[in-house]
Image (cartoon, rainbow, N blue to C red; front, side, top):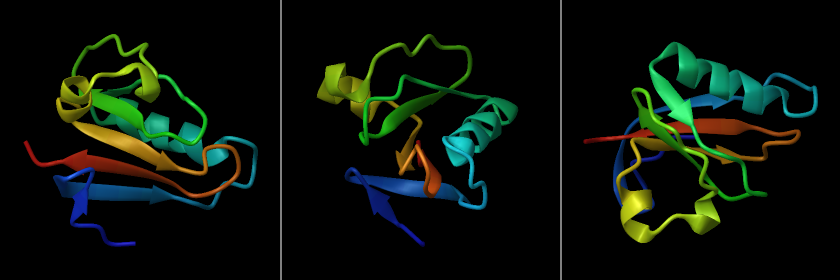
Length: 94
């Protein structure tokens, strides 16, 4: 899947995780990728995006509790079927 715009923002890079058949396996692989590349992921909220920020941040907020300005300040998001499907890490242009 190639995506140029997501949530009205230009996509810099995208990484897809789809080969783990365990419950939440692709989600954990995506979070591991984030951690290994200097990003921190926020809290899961059903099938809504999960905010990610580069650096050392505390992101306890679920997507539904974030303001529009908080959403727009995220460096990227995790999207997909977190329980048993494909999960994508989307990093936005600055």
